[in-house]
Length: 310
Image (cartoon, rainbow, N blue to C red; front, side, top):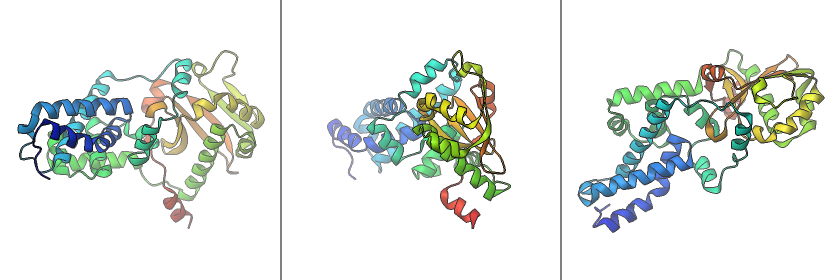
């Protein structure tokens, strides 16, 4: 591709790559608004370099991508310095969950780059790990380029991505067939909770299921402990909005649900199964310390589950 002839040409080249740059920024930041800020900042920086800065650049898309990724990295580092806290106010959580349905452009970004579940797990990585993993594993950027962005050696960048991969997927289950069955039940539970499907919930819940919840997460008059399949199933209809912000992840190695509006974990549901493959306990917490200590990993894919079942 020839070098840009003037600033108008440079702007047109940037606009041609804008969707790709938004995908990269969204994968790194997990927010359309933040991604758009990073892309806009990248254009301002590219335009300041001007034609002279772009002169001799063999791959303009790569140059734009590197600038955008650098802007996103600065945002990630700023987030870590702020040490954002989980929401303490259930009303605030409900307001945020009410907006969980992604606008069309955000839905497209999710479909083309990373899943919501992956965003939740990526949020636990260090900025350098997240950048190395997303740029290499999702967008196939070479480690030599990533190394320059992170001010590390290519070997160190490769190690960052490898560590991120390990944190995302965790180790193999001790009982893979049992873990697969547990995962299917939790996925069905979340789907039924999101749709308010009482009949499906009654099939999944043990007759004497016990639900425990932190008092801060529910309003006055809601018991912190509730027993019985019918009672628990009926209660879920009051929390379908929150459930729609949920994703199924492994929480400390066991399948559970993370309520994560905008990809940020706010509530954990630890789901206990009996030998009958029904849900016997549901422990719900939004305690900041427990949230911070919890280890999230991605569940096995459907193909992995079939292999273990076979």
